[in-house]
Image (tube, rainbow over the protein chains, first blue to last red):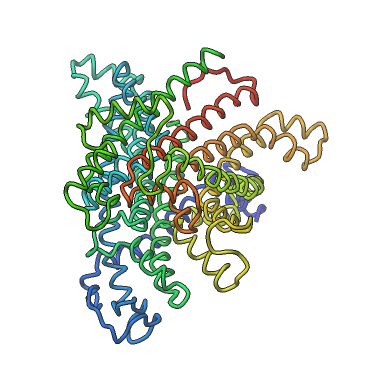
Length: 303
Length: 311
């Protein structure tokens, strides 16, 4: 191997063999990131696609009860996931619940991303009292008993989809805000900001037209990791009985309902849980891989 | 040092006051009347009004708040409606259980994550490390109520080796602690790995290696002791967070801690009990965090309190 490379490429002799290149840390790192992205994408699609297409799939209605076929084990009578305690098709219920759970997750992450981006960017750019207010808010929220407060608010305003979305968004904005703030702090010292100011642009224009586009890519990667957390948080709220109201069969509620039958009908808890795990692992891997890939290309340019 | 502690204590008191005030207002805006939960099933309107007066719920929110603050400073958090005992004492009875669970979970996390992180650091960027990394991510991605139920089913129903719920013997601690630790291992092992990699590739280690010091001592003696401080801080912070964050696991395992208490208090609209729980857990978590920040300069003399930016 080494002899052939030496003879065939005489103009640039190198003792680095392709095998060494393949095993070098840097290339391995980017390959790891690629593996993570691919596996993550596949797992995510495995859950999201059926959930999105739930209405088109040939499945029984998720609310259709059939007391004669209660708690059928998976793969009987065309019920891939079996049936629940009221004879409803579990797969249909999981996909139905997934629509609500994923919708809440995505909306919550969008809202928290926007709030976090705006607050973090303003704090980092303007400094002074804006920064003081935002930073104190971030600190205060870190020391709050978060889940208790979330349960409290849901108990107060009623467990509707907008309330739960808002509650999860409020729980998550600090993460985005802290990251955006630290990145804007670095970015605002760069010459192009001075240039834009010298050209007479108002602060708001500099911030949102020039600074924010430069940090939004990094932020959007964190948002992907937050989506995984949002799905978990929503399922925990549902499990504790503070999820969306009854007609929605969210994943957390499916598990809490099936818990009483776990010794006799394992699938009622196990399968919805596995679906959550599949989605969350997928999204986490995707976010992780993308973050590593960006870090690799930028070579630590963004701290 | 003293001024720093005083300043931090002042800030902590302010955050706690803010938290408890928010909770006070929120629960009084909530629909649902605690008097109905407190009264006999066939109570008349007059009975309900009388109960409300007894519970101090008849005034405006502001006047209730003033009374509440006055009582707060004398250490009186009111009487729990459902336990008919001082709310503060009801909560304090539960606190040791939550601390036990959090402590066990943190120790378990350390026992798993430290060797795992070191193992990953020594095989950084290999296929096997990626595999281990994916496994910890998977553990972190499990909803804790689900992994809890799964562990329960396997280890106390199918193979009845461990008790299913409550805290009767120490073995009851095993499953809840594992469930909580599963979520933390990914975070801590990744931190250990990062710290170890940066130490293992640093010049001082190359010098030590050139001096002929054995690989085992380089890893476990030199690199690990220099990685210890950030890891210990992170573990402490996780412990502080657990003091108010193990609600779900406590509910799954019927653990008699603060978390399951707060769920019950919310269900029965037990205002004094909700307030007392939030106050106690918030205060505990904040104090533990303060303690960690104070210990930091003792572990690492390079750190000066009040100088470094807040973490």
